[in-house]
Image (cartoon, rainbow, N blue to C red; front, side):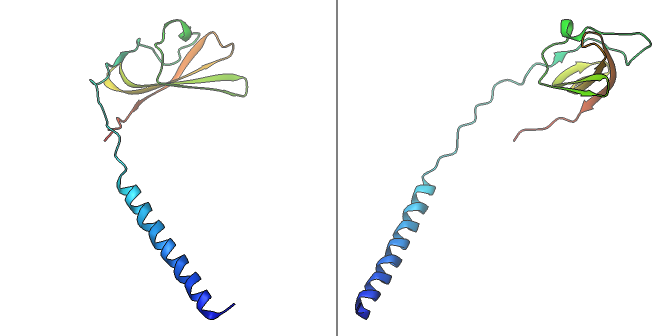
Length: 125
């Protein structure tokens, strides 16, 4: 193969590469950011007043707790665990904050409250 053919091939590949880069940069510049529409702030959920575990006390939480923002189920040893999270709730002396309630049960019906947390608010920007 003569040398002049190799030069043309190298120049052609370089030109193609430069054109492709320019086209990709132009296409990337055309992207538009999604429109964010914000509605009114969510109304806080009012949770019933619950006490930490007392001797023989039990709650049938499936019957009266509002639908949580997230729910985690688990099991350790012979106890079932549930963690309910409400990101905007009124509960006891906490007003309109995030709340996490942790329950345990031996039979999946009668639940005892053993932990409650106030969660810091996360501002979405």
